[in-house]
Image 1 (cartoon, rainbow, N blue to C red):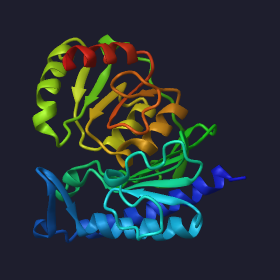
Image 2 (image 1 turned 90 degrees about the vertical axis):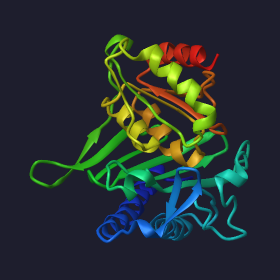
Image 3 (image 1 turned 30 degrees about the horizontal axis):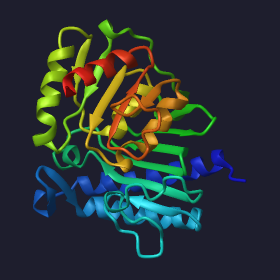
Length: 287
């Protein structure tokens, strides 16, 4: 029997250690060391170094678990190595699998623009058991385990660590603060996002784009955002944050409204109140 609360505590420590490495590297970071994976989609030695640290620690924590990692630094025999290459590898399986984004918001990071984060989830088949997202600049660690509620560990005014319970907001659509992200697949998504913004701009409280899927999800859980939607993203981008939203009382689906979103490339996360209105806008924009 897994002690999810204790494992979550240890994963938070791992995320913080990786975050400390990222924070230190940012002090001397050079744009010359950035690689281009696809158009406008970047990776650096920092992403890869963070991932190696995380994989090493998680392998020691649960040797039986496999991996889905954004940068594919795991070695043969360790289960799924890359979500892009193994999307669907964990579907229907009983095997434990870590889903890791070692630096979510790389474009933000290379420009010194917050937020950017470490995201770690533990899944088993169609269940998300643990979700941890560490926002590096604000030094906030968002976390949840299945059935344990959603929490954030942060510094108070006296710079001491404190834990807070997360709960989604209660805004109606007319007052809602939406996060509508811009994925790298601009050719396919540009017509949709243009219609989506046109549908909601002036009819909701306001619209934001923050550049980190993991953090957008956590902000929904914390009531800082009322809704978030994005397509053409990987499992590592949303898996941990999705559990945090659900444990905070929110709702998570894909773009078609299916509650089983774990094998797809689209996520809609809300306070629950505005979910149907957001889905209706997405359906209209996609049409």
